[in-house]
Image 1 (cartoon, rainbow, N blue to C red):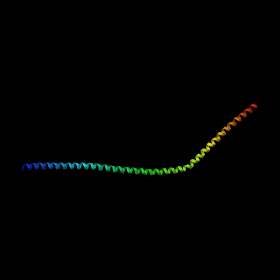
Image 2: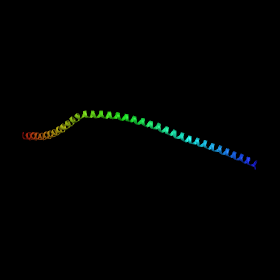
Image 3: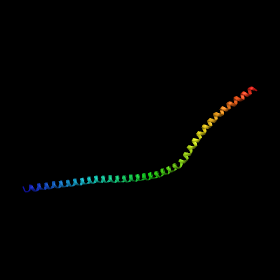
Image 4: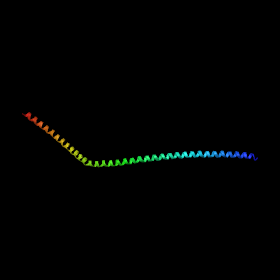
Amino acid sequence: MASANPAAEAEEARQRDELAESLAELFANVSVMVRGELQGTNNQLALLEKMNDRVAQEYSNYGDVAAGLRVFVEQLNEKNRGFDEYVSQIDAIDQQVTEFEAVVSMLDKHVALLEKKVKSAYQISSSTQ
């Protein structure tokens, strides 16, 4: 039994060594897999950080453009206020032209009436002579 026991013990030790090697290989593989997953996550986070920086820079540029547009709009508003006086003058001239056209129309009708009277008087005086 003593000789059977050493062989069984040797077999058992060999199986334990194989099990230990298999477990060590399993842990090494799991470790590589976890490192790969962590590296992938790390890469995604780095990409996300770069994207955030780029978007922040783009929005900063938009802010600069908006500030420039605000200044431009203020300048246009100042110019517009400068034209208000001219617009009111143009409106007054337009009103005067409208009134003048009404007077001209009335005078035109009056001249047409006078022409008829003169023609009528001329025809009467030429027919009596």
